[in-house]
Image (cartoon, rainbow, N blue to C red):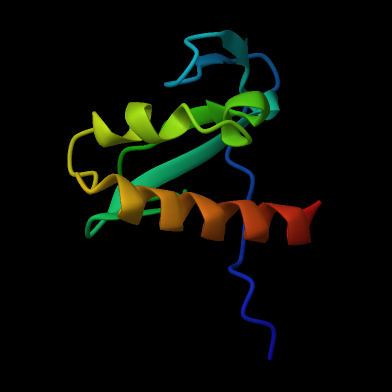
Length: 95
């Protein structure tokens, strides 16, 4: 069975949201949506608080510092880096 998580789009066609890393405001469809659950960064599944990251920042390394500042995020930057690498591999499969 495929272990790729089920991903649903939770977005509006006109809503503007902000990337937590570069602070650019973009249409919600152009941003990737995540949440922090049990000190792990995951794709947003419809429950809980979420945050957005643009695709440019997702591929850069400056995202690690921005994520470390979030509430309930792991404070160890190596753990954040592992979560980001895992998420990047999932997104490559989805594209």
